Image (cartoon, rainbow, N blue to C red; front, side, top):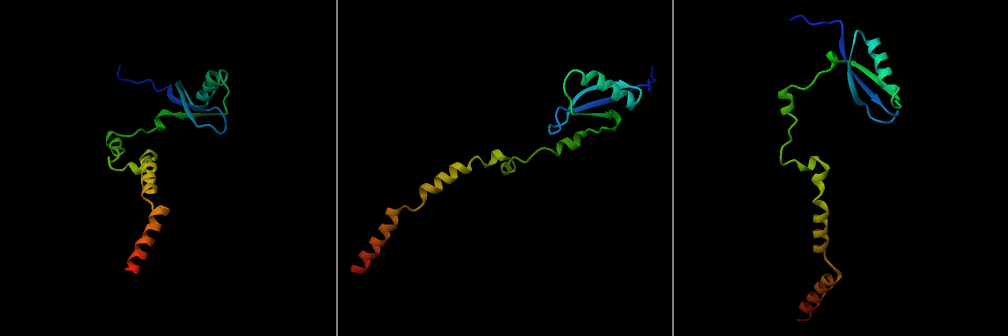
Length: 120
């Protein structure tokens, strides 16, 4: 019972629909070797839909993050500027800035005050 059958290995199958599309995981399969895994992936996948490329990866060559590594992915709460949605407030700020800008009336009124002071 404790012995594992090592004849079959687990392989992960990835594919690209077009040459410019991203690689997507499709399914896992059991095969005795890499060549047989590739043939099985072609038979099971390529006959169903168009494919530009297939990648076969032995599962033992994949590494996932540990729990401690996942904790380092957390972002600090005060770092909204790192994401694009963090810049959403800029439109409002710009609108406030434009409203506070000097308009022609205000600038001309300064000249009027200066002229009044000179005439006194």
